[in-house]
Image (cartoon, rainbow, N blue to C red; front, side, top):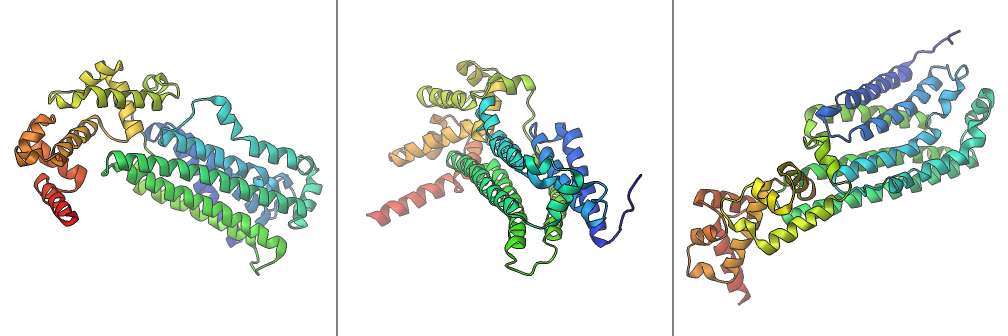
Length: 377
C-alpha cells in the first residue's frame, strides 16, 4: 500500500531538481555519441547526486517512515562521485594510466566508508530511521570529516592534472583553443567540489550548532537542485564543453594507455629530422615517418598536444623563423626568405600563422625584439 505523500514547496522544488538530474543523466547515457566517449562518468555522478536528492524528497514528503531505506541513499554513495570525475579528467587531459588495477585503487575510499557504515546499513528500517532522526552522531561526524578529506584529495588530483595539461598546451601553442576548454572544465569541477564541501560543512554545522541554519539538509538539497539546472544551461549553451574528438574505437584502443610515449617519440622525430622544413609535408607523410596511420597520428597530436596537424607543423616552422631572427639572419635576408627556408610556402600563410602564434606580425615582432635588445644595451 502506498504511503500518503505530503506536498509542500520543498517537495516540489526537490522533485523538479530530481527530474532534471535524471533527465541530464539519461541525456549523457543515450546521446553519448554526441558527447565525449567518457561522459558516462559524468552520468554516474549525476545519478548519485539524484539519489542523494531523492532521500531528502522522501523525508520532506513524509514517506520515509514507509520507505526508510531512502534516508540513507546518499550516506556512502557520494564517495563514488570523485573516482568517476577523476576518470573523466584523465580522459580529457590524455593522462590516464591505462592500468585497470590503478583505477580500482580510486574506489578504496568508497569501500572503506562502506565497511565503516555496514553496522548502520544493516539495521532494520525502523532502527535506521531512528538512527538518522537522532541527528548527527559522533559516528556520522567522523564519516563527514573522512568525506571532506577524500573530497579534498581527489579535487587536488583533478585540478593538478588539469593545470599540468593547461601549462603544457600553453607552452606548446599559446593560442591553443583547448586551453580555454580545460580552463572551463577546471572551473566546473571546482564548482562541484565547492558544492559538495558546502553540503558536508552544513552537516558539520548541524553537529556543533555553530550557526543557526535551520534545515541544513534543505540547503544542501537546494544546492544540488541548482547545480542540475546550472549544468543543463551549461550543456545546451556550450555543448562543446563535453564533446570529444571523433575517432573510431580502433584508433582509441590502439595505444592502450601509451599515448604519452607515442607523443614523445613523435616529438623526438620532429626535432631530429625536422620534416616541417618540407613545404609539402602532409599528415600522411609524417604518419609514414612515425609508423602510424594518418588517423592514429591525428589522434596523438590532438590528444597529447591539443592542436591539429597543421598547427603543429606551423608551430615548428615559426620556431625555426624565430631562431633565424635571434641569430640576426633577418638583417641580411628578408623575413619572407627566412619563412620559405623554414617550410612556409607563401607570405600569406606565414603572416597568418606567425600572428596567430605570437600575437604579432613578423615585422612588428622584429621591431619589438630590437627594442628589447636596445633597452638591454
